[in-house]
Amino acid sequence: MLQSTGLINADASTAKKATPMGTSFTPKSSGDCACPSTGETSQTIDVSIQERIAKHPCYSEDAHHHYARMHVAVAPACNIQCNYCNRKYDCANESRPGVVSEVLTPEEAAHKALVIGGKIPQMTVLGIAGPGDPLANPQQTFRTFELVADKAPDIKLCLSSNGLMLTEYIDRIKELNIDHVTLTINMIDPEIGEKIYPWVRYNRKRYKGIEGVKILHEKQMDALDALREADVLCKVNSVMIPGVNDEHLAEVNEVIRSKGAFLHNIMPLISAPEHGTHFGLTGQRGPTPKELKAVQDSCSGNMKMMRHCRQCRADAVGLLGEDRSQEFTKDKFLEMTPEYDVAQRQEVHANIEKFTAEVKEAKAKQAAEKQVKNAPKILVAVATKGNRLVNQHFGHAKEFQIFEVDGTEVKFVAHRKVDHYCQSGYGEEATLDNIIKSIADCQGVLSAKIGNCPQEELRKAGIEPFEAYDVIDKVAIDFYEQYMQKQNAGA
Ligand code: CLF
Ligand code: SF4
Image 1 (cartoon, rainbow, N blue to C red):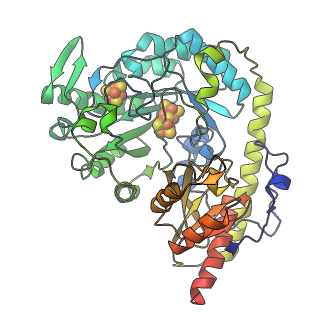
Image 2: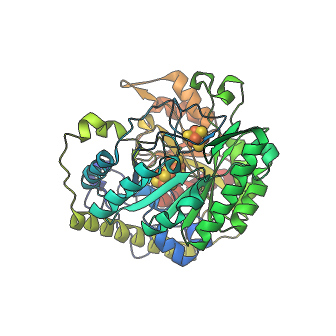
């Protein structure tokens, strides 16, 4: 196995000290880390916007390593029909189909926000994303935002909608200081939209086929204009449906950018027969990770792409890669007394900021020293529990974050969900095969610990295991250097 040089501390137990999330990082003055940027964010997003998104885990790739979001499921109804949804499940635009949420009243939702804000101080964003469309449930949605804004003004409010009713509520959105709005826009050509939306309900009338899709399209375009004029940050989500809108998404990307959206999240269609959706039942497949990346890459020259979306459920809680919703089911959180402490939350946030600033500075320094032009790029898969650290055992990873490394830069490009290898204390062979398939395009896998058996199998598949407990950027550069040395030596 390639070896980590153990720059922070190879031993996970001693590395856990006093930083925001329980781990320590002390860059040396010579610069422990080696890459200039943690992603595209700082290079392509205006500085004033960067400040507004700095603590939003979806809008900022950097933030998603440290800050958490929570959803409250207060919006059951919807005003359109998407062929990838049947409303027995959470909204597939912003959730993983197959998991039904408990619908909450605004008062219950506000109580839950205060409970979680106290227990998870790095929770900075409250989103309403379903299970239907928030703006098809305006009373519940805005009442919830009002209550949360009143009791926890340091929590950012976030809304995700299909956009049909957005212009009707733009003043309310502005009044309540809802600074982040996501619109799901899958087409700008109603003929393509006809294959995605069988009907649209607008002004108490149901419009079928292309008539309805035209209304939806016009309203979505108006929604983009309204958000831009109101200076509300707008992200667009698009569901990639192979053979339906995959080749069309570049045009969608052009139009949304020209209308002021600053971030585009192209997500894979999730469809399985057991979900009972139209696409699930008719065999419409979702894209492969490679197809998804190709479309994301083709749009990335135009605007910033979001690649760290986890298509979370309408009652998701925690960092994007984790789901703590089961700790806060209705029967549990209603029994909990909120211990919402703004000062404690601010202290945690300040520690996170200090930690990330130190990492950034150390990386910039080392990048300046190591700049190599046209260095080959490789992909590495990282087992992480968050905080931008390699800090998880290979066998416990339920997803791998994928980074592109070129010797100076370490760039997040994707994540791959897997079943964790270690089941009841034993390695599971079939699971390992699937893990290897899902990270087959990677040259290395970086984890805090990995057993001998998976090491051997990974090597047979051309994936080099690497053990370390440190900042991802640092470990990735160490791995890169050792890997390239081996390649150059013909090993
Ligand atoms: Fe929720 Fe959406 Fe706000 Fe984020 S989710 S309402 S913008 S706080 Fe985030 Fe989840 Fe992806 Fe959505 S990872 S599905 S993009
Ligand atoms: Fe389902 Fe969301 Fe589409 Fe409505 S907008 S049909 S809830 S996926």
